[in-house]
Amino acid sequence: MQAIVKQKRAPGLTVTSVPKPSPGPGEVLIAVRHAGVCGTDVHIADWNAWAEGRIKPPVVVGHEFAGEIVAVGGAVSELKSGQLVTAEGHIVCGHCLQCRTGNSHICRNTRIIGVDRDGAFAEYIAMPATNVLPLDGIPTTVGAVMDPMGNAFHTVLSAEIPGSTVLVVGCGPIGCFAVGIARAAGAAKVIASDVNATRLELARRMGAHVTVNAATDDVVRAVLDETAGEGTDVVCEMSGVPSALHQA
View 1 (cartoon, rainbow, N blue to C red):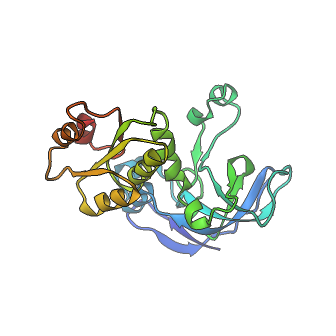
View 2 (cartoon, rainbow, N blue to C red; view 1 turned 180 degrees about the vertical axis):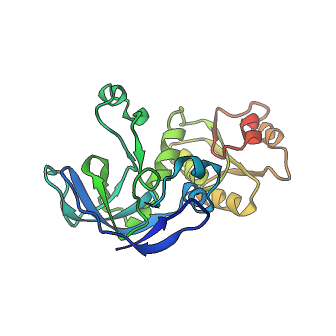
């Protein structure tokens, strides 16, 4: 099958032929229909310092995807061929202390597809059935971005949103998702800030009541002006930029 592979410890990716995986016990084989490009994939392609210390080529990259189950391994009963699905890309061991106490999100043996093992920029990917989520009528174009959507969902809904004023700092894809989720969850006012006018327009389209360009305006002053000096109830820092953290 064809796949996009990080073949060596240097910048660049290669489209090449790799063996088609087979589903083992407890796994399903998924034909990838759509995939999303994450900043992690860009780091791997560029071969930055993080990639240098983490990636062990050769590896098929990509972790955001959706597709159709085409084969089912043994001991899988809840999934079947023909289903459209997406998958959680963090594969946990299931037997460490964290996994056994219901904290598998901090499993010490986590392996990430497209990083620690072959990923989704390929015609097919084999995944543990426990990581696979049926889309139930959701198109694969949307299913492919469930990973970053989930990030935004859990970030926003960790706070009390109904009736609140929410500031989203950073309007990349996850930030824009956060804007839409805050609106859907009942925020009274959503303010979004970024340094990119195009991203701010996307935030407006996602439902931001107010947008602030941090490249030209004082974000803190703008927020205070919009809230009669009260500030916001919730801040979702979605950029990771040190200056944005200080603003938050």
